[in-house]
Length: 265
Length: 313
Image (cartoon, rainbow over all chains, first blue to last red; front, side, top):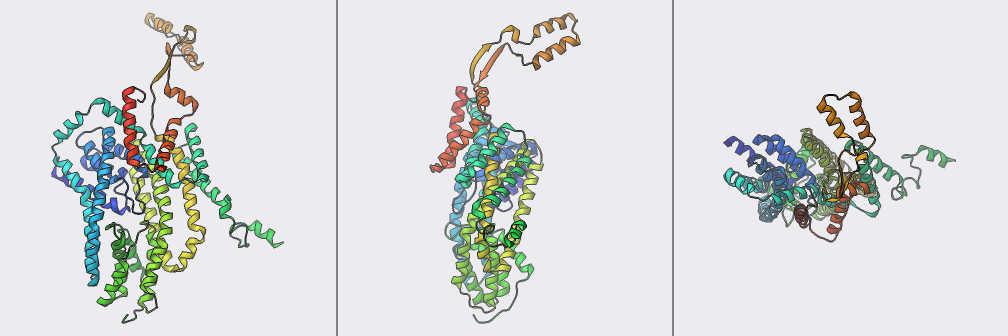
């Protein structure tokens, strides 16, 4: 492994760490982060496949309000390094990603606590009217979030590859087999988290319809997406809760010319 | 305030605020959350509006108050706040409490829109679509995910900030006028539908456990021994091959033994039934306030036990 590779891996890790808090460009999402690690380590396909699988598991990992989700950044970066450099299998990578996600969650909570001090530093600079000072504290905090992933990545790289490989090989077959099996269905937790956030009694019928169409039919995802959008639009048009104001009330003529004409008589 | 500054924020100023608003959460902290990020994004505007050190210190202080919302839905709040700051700098009577009131008043309802729309629908749907491409070894997966997401996101940040800036205080009225509710509901319909689609497709649960074995009577089995003999003697003919294919097509068994696994039985009931029950079970556990990580570990334990006992494969 060349020094150039090491630098690139650490750079990708740093980027993912910053995005783990920003949540804007999505460099911390497994499909991006693991693919990038795959590219810089020369095992692009492994990274891509790991990223795709982890992405499904991480579908429901979202920071809402002050709650901190399992950390996709450390999970995807560290397990991608183990898969692409140390030769772990993809199913081992998935199994390892879960404890890594929790470790990342603890680390980000740690950094988010340190930044309380940074906020107070920014207060002091604000008193002096120093824009520059406030900016420095803000960017400094972002660097800390980047290091939160780059340092663990560096530690994994620093451990001799042989040690990690031996450790991986010493995992008994019943454990790897079981983890691979579980890796196939833990995506259900991700689905459940997304459903749990959106579900109201009225919306379950759409879940049921999607399930039925998917379980017995062969429509691809694009077709399903179109059906979903059509359903959403129909729901908004016909649901009584959205029609009390516009449709029944004044003839504002927003969407129904026929109705306007009828009202004129 | 010592002086009145009739400066109007230019498009370039507003663009700088938009660009910096992407770093809103960089110094997210457990005390005042997005406060420093908010001030950081406001700085390009504050720099133009206030020139004395005294005014600048006061402006920074007022923008370092508590703030937290969905990072993308902060943009309309930025827009409105820019208008308020502009008017305040021009000498209008807008006090700190009014500005803080607008920020706090908008952030709650807006976060309630952003979470289900962006985190609950758009990212899972786009992520699942991209993951399906990636799993079929296509690089379009990550590429589409990255570009589609960022184009939508940046367009949303810029246009809602502009909307907030132009509409000023009126925006609160527009937002509460049902539009946001419609957006949230529509997104939730799409999201629930797609989740229903994904559950049976990408949850892989296999139950190779054998429930029953049954010997297939000779007359219901494809006559392979006959064709093998013919092949050995070198007298195989097209008609014989056609006969074998016809037998297979008419539903005769190609195995001497009919094995029924748990998987076959479940598929006869309804394909995807096991993933469905598993997902609903997880939703139920989440509602019981069991943490997702606990559920994931539980599933790992179930997977390992099931594998060792031969239920899963």
